[in-house]
Amino acid sequence: MINNPKAARIVAVVVIAMLVITLAASLFGCAADTKTSGDVDPTSGLKYVAVADLPKEGQDTLKLIDQGGPYPYSRDGVVFGNLEKILPKHDRGYYHEYTVKTPGEKDRGARRIVTGNAGERYYTDDHYKSFRRVAEDGGTS
Image (tube, rainbow, N blue to C red; front, top):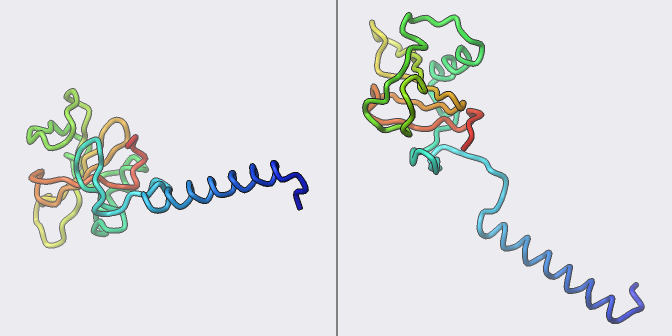
């Protein structure tokens, strides 16, 4: 017990302040920075997609990218020009594209992973008409 009334009041105020801060943080979402499917990347304005929510072939492509290949398609790793201007603007050569196999397709299909030089990754399943930011990508945002 604290015998000094002044010290007891100070301790009580500090404890109450800590409780208020903890409550406010939990109410306003000030928690660990976890990105899930549907959240929006503040840099690109694109929705995040979790790796687990990608098709298995997309997860396989990410693994190939992480290990540096070998890639099944000769065009994997080529510069992606961002001609659609959906991804954040960067100098040519910043982005590279990789094929995500599409079962039943005779060619490369429409699915791709596009990587940026800062480690960010994007997924499209409609041949660059739309993108989602891959959440677990080691990127800066």
